[in-house]
Image (cartoon, rainbow over the protein chains, first blue to last red):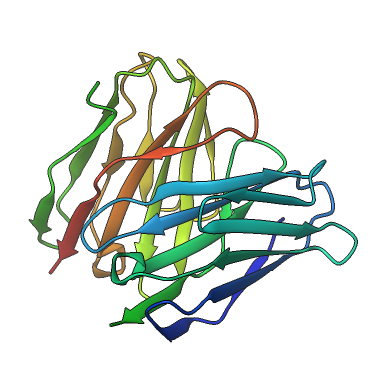
Amino acid sequence: GENVEQHPSTLSVQEGDSAVIKCTYSDSASNYFPWYKQELGKGPQLIIDIRSNVGEKKDQRIAVTLNKTAKHFSLHITETQPEDSAVYFCAATSGYALNFGKGTSLLVTP
Amino acid sequence: NAGVTQTPKFQVLKTGQSMTLQCAQDMNHEYMSWYRQDPGMGLRLIHYSVGAGITDQGEVPNGYNVSRSTTEDFPLRLLSAAPSQTSVYFCASSYGSRAAEAFFGQGTRLTVV
């Protein structure tokens, strides 16, 4: 089955800096790569996703890049703010079931 | 729209007890799934359903049962609770097509003593 690796497990940045989280996947059939943000005590919420026919996607301060050949994709957050502090999960799938990475705990300090 | 609603939010069980975690969605989504979240393990798929009457196992199905009699509801049953089932459980739903955005409930924190 699909195996998704996510790094780093924790990340601390200063407000205004950029944050990058990286994921790799094993199944070349995977074609959908969402990123979820989970705040304390809440369920994960989709923040951005990318499909295999696209190399990059951007939504305001958030961007995702995909390298299908290398089987890796990354989340980029620019101009970080304290409210970006949360746990971020990457996932990959070629069907219905999402295969998640183990998460990155991001802390943005003022 | 309420989205995905899970009940209860918190539950404490004794070893060997059974219970049902409820999940309901009002978005007419065909696909529903259950995950468990443990520290450092991410979210692991327990069971999923692609429509009423159809269910299948995920990565960690042992000790859990599901059924899908309606589009809206997807309950998760713990047959005989064990301490290893202490976890936070999330229900999710998405549109019928593959590779679609999943909407998560707020979670049920279960402790088995």
